[in-house]
Image 1 (cartoon, rainbow, N blue to C red):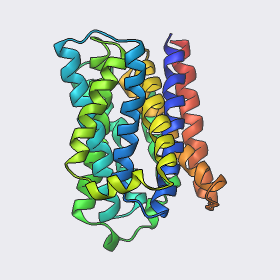
Image 2 (image 1 turned 120 degrees about the horizontal axis):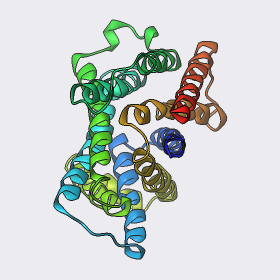
Image 3 (image 1 turned 30 degrees about the horizontal axis):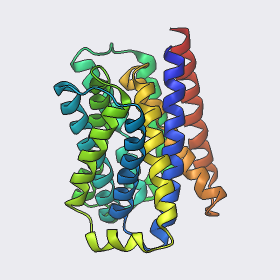
Image 4 (image 1 turned 135 degrees about the vertical axis):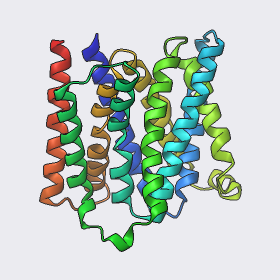
Length: 287
């Protein structure tokens, strides 16, 4: 049961990584990161609504509350991540956002949801090492990093942890289609407060609307369905660790589709992440 949960989370992370690459492609075409994030969530909402109409689910107060919090967490994750990029760099922002497994593990331990274990600490360490090599954050000079960029990056990681726990709790009270409908509705409302509405409207008249739709289906609708289903079958810490295949997928997308180069240390970082996730998945299967 738990192995299937890990595999579903991995599939969701692969789709997130592809979506990250597609988002970078749209940014290169001139669209702002917040507008791209808004369309990713709002198109995902339409995808989930169609599913909900065919398979309606019952709602209750705990499920509604946790789903709203999860949607706010997703909005905070993407929003703070974009702020961190603008105030520092993509490398710094990505590295700080992927501290999420540390936050998840510490919160799980403090509230006694999981037991402290050496292999999970080692898994977190090696995944973070892989992310650092992959993003090459060590090449960033101190003048390129601002306090706001650091705080926003850490807030992005905390928001990541927030939506993991919120989805996990919401899943105890409802079905994925109902949870995701509420979560992405709250996400869209929050994002509307910060996006350039004129740019949002202009997307509808652009040929890039097809890419935005594709981004929303794979980057929110389908991926979050896989994620929330898998999260029910594994621990929060394990889910947060195996989801780190996302930057690997995004890097491969950039290499294959956008013709971006990968240095030897970046390839080594990808290998460390993939090996760590594989070992963690194997250990979970034995448990």
